[in-house]
Length: 161
Image (cartoon, rainbow, N blue to C red; front, top):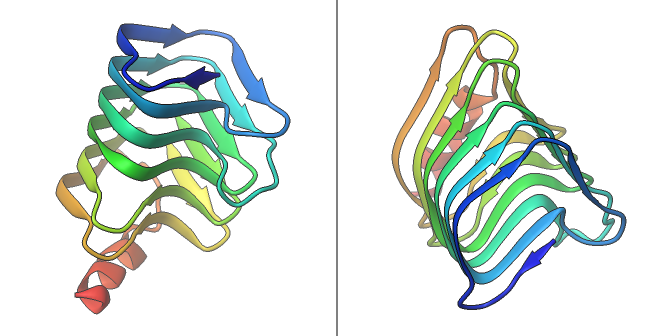
């Protein structure tokens, strides 16, 4: 699903499966989404390292609520250019990618990330969460038994600065 420049969506809810065999599951190119709710599966089978389950390439997603699965052959959730406000992962939510579950590009914004619930996880072969140089973040909260490679995340932030 491609959401193009200047498109605006108030609320988008997925309760089934959104899947791409060659690109990102959801790709935004300059669009603004106020609320994205995923209760199903968002999947990218694309083998190019630019693809992700959900990819934000310019634009904004103000609020993401994930209780389902976001998966990509390379990245689960990627911010190349743009920002997201609050990303809430609730019990049972999964974000997974080959390299990292979540990646935020150079000088981009990760608002607030809240990961809660014992069955919730963010994972990748390299990193659970990968913040590149100059990334700004407001708050990362891991609670109620959720799993991610957060210790590595904090280490990377300190080393990169």
